[in-house]
Image (cartoon, rainbow, N blue to C red):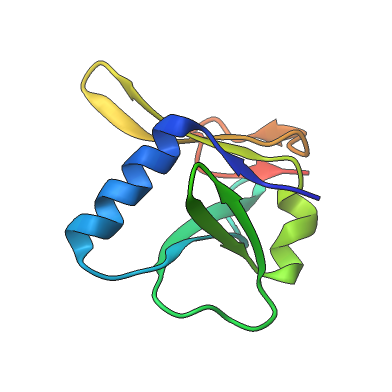
Length: 107
């Protein structure tokens, strides 16, 4: 099982953590919500949780709780700018469908 970052995502996270002045990585998880059933959640990590699985890409640590890992296995997190919009993009091979607004997905 693995979760990876692109170099663009790792660079963005690393710069934000540096600007923030604290933190050891990014926590990626899923929660039940939205039209399709699940949504991604992201938060910066100051202290690890013992049960977290930890992956590292381009020197940046990604923390995932055991419950979320089965939904996120194989996911690549990217960071992209498209016109005036920018943000994280999830490439999750477990997604079967997404809702029309793009806020949630189903597996």
